[in-house]
Length: 181
Image (tube, rainbow, N blue to C red; front, side, top):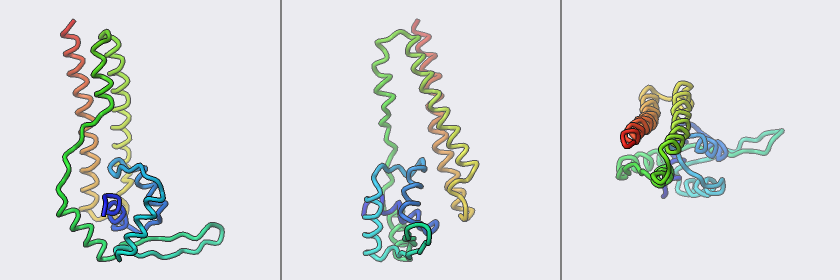
């Protein structure tokens, strides 16, 4: 199985969902990065269904197409838990397009580099505000245990701390740049 399969099992461990609900949640989530298309979600759901990890129920609707709501089975919960415990955690990747962009900025005047850092800071501050607001609204917390809420709280703190470190880096960058004058 691949990461999307476990992502789906994880979402279903929270609550039953349609494939569309899963796609929306992945798009909105800061941690469930995935840029695939709906077909990949539905292909994974069929595979998980065939493996006996999920089940589905067709909900009939009068004014809209019928929808399939998927739920996780005990075997799916066991597979998810095994993946969580047995898979070696990945270290963070530091592939940032901005670092490529700024690496060539040394050819420019300090004022232009400062303008670039200004624009970067604006984007980073927006990300911090968005993550703090998502945490405040408890977007992914409804119907979760206190432990699950705590885990998601820590995920948002991790993201915000990473962005805060970026802001601190820009301050140090600017101080060092000014010292070169």
